[in-house]
Every structure is written in structure tokens, then in C-alpha cells.
Length: 392
Ligand code: OAD
Image (tube, rainbow, N blue to C red; front, side):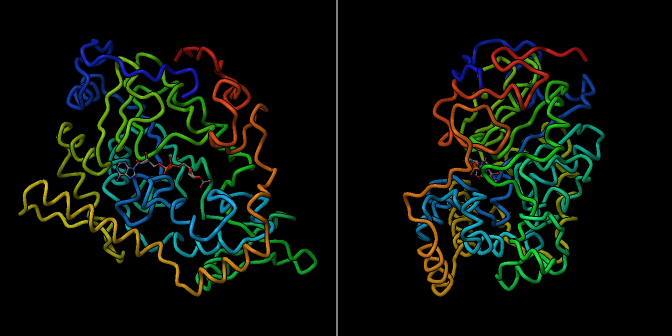
């Protein structure tokens, strides 16, 4: 990402801080150096095992599934100018994803455990499902970079909308309107849509990755700016761990990067094993079970590892499919609304133009090229071309 060289360094290249490029070496580093300033950066991949789809996985991701609703483009569901014209697709999704029905995953519990051990400096999450807090991570340790469902307001006069009414409206899959009768504007949860600025908390805390003594990046494709640039601001000699199905964002390009290209939950369990924390992690996760729909994959390992994996994949696919199944009636209703709204060619213009530096939410398709897109205004403490190493 950003100016980061995306070529992975040779496995044989010796690390500068760790004794080896593996998770056991990271665990040893944490213990020997008494690492207490861990910055965690997460995305939708840490919630998929809870039954919540991510955005960009080819078949199961939200955007692939939205294609059948004939939106002008999948990300329109999170586009503020499209929302003004047609809020129903967003509220259909909100109905599916609204916090409260899902159980945190082991990955969420791992972050909570890091905090309980006094080692979490800050969690930057792009997720809006609030599962971090449900897992026990305190609110003041979390930066909801893309906002959350926790609060909501009128998009015209900014009047806050009551939580209980919001819950009720979302459950009925209705579109809430401003409580000020003279306004009647659309109400939207304080989730950052494309074309909107990131919360103030993101800006207030954006210098923390440069102060971290370890960064853990999990379950994100690192495609959405400015979040995607956070890992590149971790100091060069500070170890960075990526736990994700795929290599993303140039991670692996530094000698102290450690890649666990696997399922997040399996990755954090491996990490916990290396730290000698496995039992505590399972206990931490067990605490999240109260009253939640159990969507987690079974853990009875009587089969071979391959059979177990196949079953997990099959179950996960079914879970996600069920979570996302909109009834035929609902799909028809949304299609009708969309046809009334924008035509496929009328992509809203609120998404910032590619060459203009912007601190609003952007994806690569909203920028012409990475090189023409600078983030100096978002990270003024660092220079885009050559991140400075701030002194601690
Ligand atoms: P994406 O869907 O873009 O990326 C999820 C990443 O997690 C991908 O690299 C997957 O391969 C990986 N993944 C999925 N499940 C996994 C698992 N169980 N174990 C390991 N890896 C897994 O999601 P984000 O990066 O979070 O914006 O997307 C960023 C933003 O794009 C979101 O915040 C959202 C979206 O537009 C808004 O909602 C405003």
C-alpha cells in the first residue's frame, strides 16, 4: 500500500528485530521485550466465521451477492448520494447485519485477551458489527474507522434518532425519517459511506501505528483508503503480523513481517499456542456465548484435517448464504425501488475524484492510480512518499 514495496522479501532474508520470520518468534519477542503497545487493524474477515459475510470474497462476499439486486454498482449500497435517492437497499442490508444477533469469533476474543494482558494500544476496525465490544474490548480502545451502528442521525439536519426506534425500524425493514416533523430527512446510522469523511477518532489516533511495538493485521483486503495505509506507517523495524487468507497491502515486504495466510481464527489460535495463552483464549471466547445464535463451526476434530476443513467450508458457505438470502418478495421490492432511482450509468458524483487528495472513504476504483492519490492530508504527521520515523 502507498509507497510500500509490494514484493515479498526472500524467506531467507534475516529479520532485524525478530529472531525468525514465524509466529513463535513473534511470541518470544512479545514476552522478552514485554511488548505493550500492540496495534491491531481488522476488517470483515474476522467476522465471517460468525456468519457475517465479508465484502469482496468472490462468491460469498456482500458485493457479489448484491449484484443480483441490480444496483448500479455494488458499492452503491454504501454511497451517500445513492442512499439519498434510494435508501432501501442499505436498510435491507442493515436488517441482515444489525448488531445483536451474532456471536463474536475467536479472533475478536484474541483482541480482548491482548487487552486484558495489558498489551493492546489500540484496535482500528473497519467493521460495523460491534462484535469487538461484545467480545470485551473496551470502547476507548477501539477506533471505528468506518463508523458503526451504535448511533444514528438525520442526514440533513443531523438530529440524533433514538436507539430503540432505530432498532424497531430496522427490524421491520423500514426506512427511518427524522423525528423533527419539519425536516423529515432520511436517518442513517453513523457508518461512513463512500464520499463521507472518516470519524474524528480516526484522525485523532492515526499516529498510533507509528508508535506501536507490534502490529497485527487481520481479515482485511486493505483496499479502502485511508485505512489501507495504516500498516505502512508502522516503523520499519517493528514486526507486523498478517493473518488473512491472502497476502494484502504489501505485507511481507519487510524483513520483520510475518504472514499467516490462513483462517483468522486458526491463525490466532496458533498465535495463542505460541504465547502459551491457548486455554485463556478459549475461556475468553466461551464467555461470548451467552444467548447468541451459535453459527460457529463445530470443533469436534474426529475427522482428518482435510475432511474437517471441507466440512468447515461447506458449513460456512451455507451460513453465509442463509444470512444473505433475501426473500424473493424483498428482492423484487428493492429492484423496483432501484429502477425508480438511478440508471446504471448514473454513478453518483459524490465519490471524490481520483486525483484530488481526500480524507473521505475511497476504494481503488474511485482513484485513477495509487501514485496519483496522496494521503498527506489524512496523515499529516507523516510524509506520504517517505514515512518519517517519529521518535517515541
Ligand atoms: P474485504 O471483503 O474487502 O476483505 C476481507 C479480507 O478478509 C479478504 O482478503 C478475505 O480473503 C479475507 N478473509 C475473509 N474471511 C476470512 C477468514 N475467515 N480468515 C482469514 N481471512 C479471511 O473486507 P474489508 O477489508 O473489511 O466499507 O473491507 C473494507 C471496507 O470495504 C469495509 O469496511 C466496507 C467495504 O466497502 C464500509 O462499510 C463503509
